[in-house]
Every structure is written in C-alpha cells, then in structure tokens.
View 1: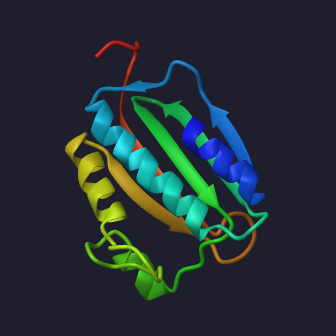
View 2: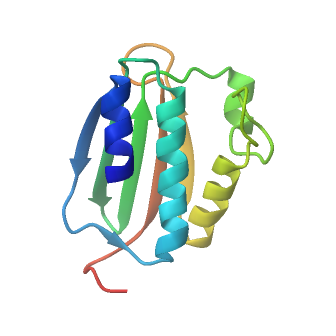
Length: 139
C-alpha cells in the first residue's frame, strides 16, 4: 500500500481504507502481492482525477475479502463479461493481461475474483477477491 499511497495523494484522488486487523489467508505472498499490485494500479488508472477509491479488507465467515472500489470506471455490459479475459483491455496502453493473471492467481488460491458494476449512485465498479481465511498470521 505504501507504494501507491503517494501516487493516490499526488493525483488528488481520495483514498478510503478500512482494513480489518488480523485478517490472514494462506498462499504465495509474491503472487498475492502481484494481484494487489494489479488491482491497485487498475484502480488508480481507471479513476477520474479527484475520484474516490475505497479499499476494504475484512473477514466474512471462513473467508477473507479484499474489495477495491472506485467511482471512475464505467464499462459497457459487453466489456464486463470480458474484463478478465486475456488480451482484453479498455485502456489505450497495456496488454490486457493483469486482470486475467490476477484471476488465475486467486483461483489457484481457492478464491474468486469478481467485478461488480453499478451505473447509478455509489461506486461504479468494485473488484472483490475472496479467499479462505486463516485464524492466525502464520503460514
């Protein structure tokens, strides 16, 4: 988070953090860090200047959930179905692989990566990563 904190502040975007302490999952830390990096970079690039990005980590039953929501990404209905497909991108630059790779990493960790889009009010898009949680901070 600290790598992106300065970028969020410098861009004028509002960052809201709600991180539930002691929320853990088992997995490869480097791969999970790659997912977080992909989702944060996408949120930063897709959000309008002075937009809002809301990042939440919480436990829900046996699951840990990461939610990164922003009010800047608007997708056509057809794009929502393709957004995690390899080589698909709505950007002028990029490969279209970040979300596809992220989805595969989360799936390999017995989790799910989902996208929610709302067209009116609240957030326009939110990525949710849900993985089985652990009760402690040990591997």
